[in-house]
Length: 539
Image (cartoon, rainbow, N blue to C red; front, side, top):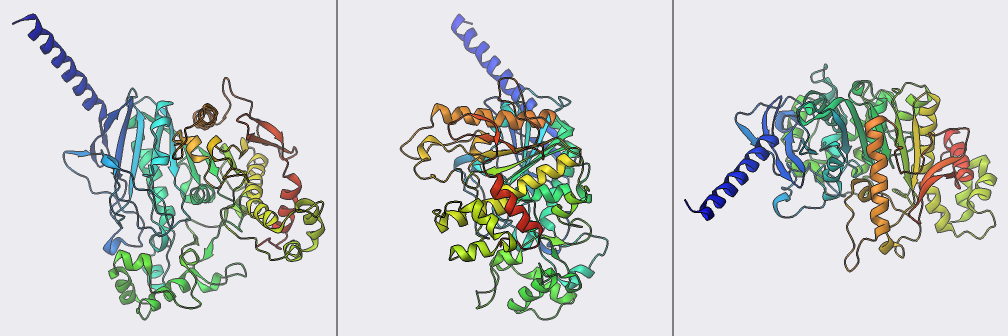
């Protein structure tokens, strides 16, 4: 054999050995079978892992059922289907990561881990709960890829959960069916089932089942608060991060299941909404036969419903969390005020221009101030101190304060008062190329690319070194918190615990620096708190 042939053979054997090692590294066994992941740039990903049986046919509107075990090795190279969604539909990935058409068969999760991690490594685990108003989004968005977290030594899990009428639905026959099962909040049941899967299986990926941090944005942040308040989620996670997720009853709805539980805030029960949906779909009655017809509807019919009719509210009205008495026993605000939340570290905050919804509406300044009732004078001093602030700016700021900033302060204070480490933030940094378009500040969701390290430049521009530095800093805080329950670490500006007696907030400043500063919104948040807690809500 010539020297050249020997070199080729050695190189081929080396490559084959590396390939075999990668294949071995990427093979894991979970409780339903073996999975083959994909190794790329020091990270192994496992996509499209079923954590519950397909919720279709007779399993529509039932709690998640066990996955049927498979034989052989299941390839986990591609994302599973997204859940049926309305608005806020996820961005479709391209190429090998293309997302299949949305489907009712959608209970999948994804795992990213360092390629160097072995079973028993006991790395911190982070579970991402996506946003989308409970009617859209998925765990497969390119903007929430777990690659960069895995490179920081984290096992990152993203999940799907049922949305819209698939995720929140009540009907009299459904309430009577299988009385031992939890009813109504199927989206939350899916999240809890996914956390149960993590607890049972994450050690096989090198994750620590006793160090799990849940984090989510918008509806995902609402979910974090709901899981903190739910007795059914206890013990499934150990830290929590709520990004722009509210926490007040005005944001976190909990609609009564039946008419005998309605109150002035929620005068229409979930069952009444379900009956109205059935009627609009041409289904009469509320018995088991009617339920059978509802389950026989196509997924598209359940998603879209009947053609719009005058006086009928939209899908958001019909798809809010339900006070079912088992999973959701009370709102997060009620639980926090009574100190019934678990004593776990929490990070909570929002963005500097975080107007996710238009709950505060006014056509004149007089109408705006009247919404604050007997605190209208304080509202004038807070929102229009010299009488020159335009109404649009006042309404925008009030929506931000009402929906996000004040509820975040409330949650942080409630956890601190209960003895938990609490860290409050405001994200005020805007990418350099977007500052002309985002003059008001960082919009709803504007922090996600920084936290996940998935920032992309707008067409015709590039990311600045400052953008990238802020992203590294933000992700470092999130990773440190997942590791230890404290976001602080070497080389980072000190982030103090939230102290309700002080006016400090940790801010990611517009200039790319960060630090704890007196909260410039204190006067606004104080009057918003007074109006909210008095029952004279700003909406």
